[in-house]
Length: 156
Image 1 (cartoon, rainbow, N blue to C red):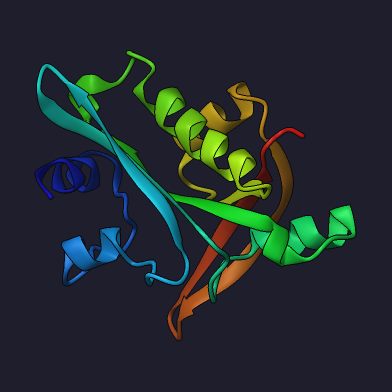
Image 2: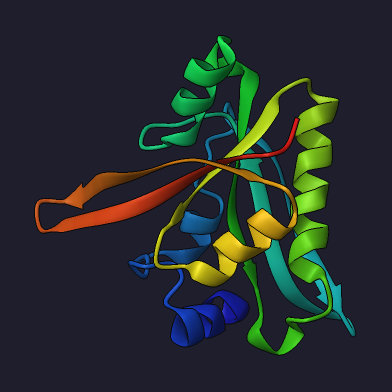
C-alpha cells in the first residue's frame, strides 16, 4: 500500500483515494479476476497491474465489442497500473502492461483499458506501446463528479 500511497501523493492516482486500498487493489471478485502482478526493483515492490473480466463501469469493453463486432466477453480489462515515482524511467510500466497483455492473449481475449483523461503520462505510455485510443467519454462517478475517460484497446 505504501507504493500506491506514494503514487497518489505524487500523481493523484487513484483519483479518489479508497477507504480500503488493499480491497481496491484486489477489487475484482474471484469470478472476474484473471491475474495481478507486481514489479520489484532492488527487492522492493515498485509497481502493480491487474487483469480482469469486464465489470460495471468499464467503458472500453463495450467500445471494443462494437468496433470488432464481437462480444465484450472477449475482452479483458487492464487496470490498477501504477509505478513508484522513484522507479520510473526503467521500463517498469511497459513490462507490467506487457505481462497483462500476454496473459490476455493467452486466454484468447483482447486487452482494453480506461484511464482518466487528465492522466496524460499514462495515456502517453499506452500510445507509445501502440494502444489505440477508441474514444474519450464522460463518466459520472458520483452526483457531483463527472470525469473524462480515455478508452484504449491494445494493438491487434
